[in-house]
Length: 214
Image (tube, rainbow, N blue to C red; front, side, top):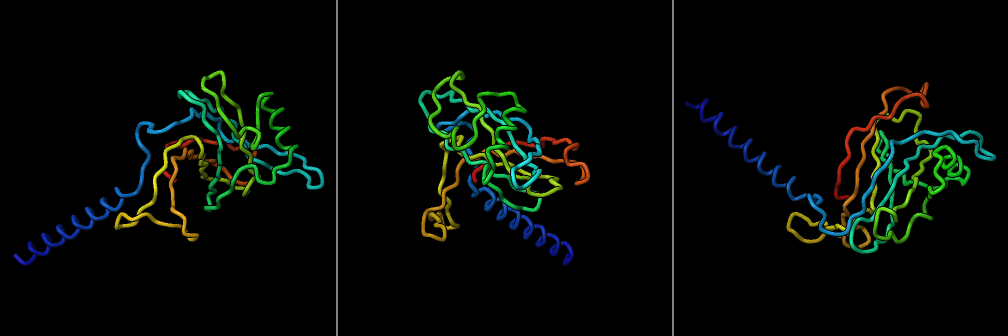
């Protein structure tokens, strides 16, 4: 009888713990299943690697993603994107930081797309219609010789946002006292199976892509 009571108590405790964890998980903001604000159509390539001879620095490797963004809504929207790469080591790198113009020109030539734009040139209004879409590219200097698994997050594609709240339902502020706001962000997960010996030969594999609040 004591053994039975012991297991019953243990099961109850586990159930309560699971319920508490589920409740906490459910409080984390998630994007709506259907657009509740403006949203741009976003299509993209797999990440590609390119080596460029930069004057005064020699050959440097870069990674880039080409993309197309279109406004299928009913009104013009401002496109102010941010592309962030999260490496296998957890390092967060914003695209197009200190990337020489020679790199963009070589990518543009390799892609054979005269309409390709880099940031900040692509930032600005996106008119309504597929024929008003824009072609862009996000570029990062290679962060590490062995990429492994990495993610790319794209913000600026949706107007959906939500304030972060604490356990009591009160809005949270950041270190500067400003409200913390999460934005609907597009996440792309990739993996490269291989090692640093032949970085330009290993294929990039797409794992998952989804909308997240970030």
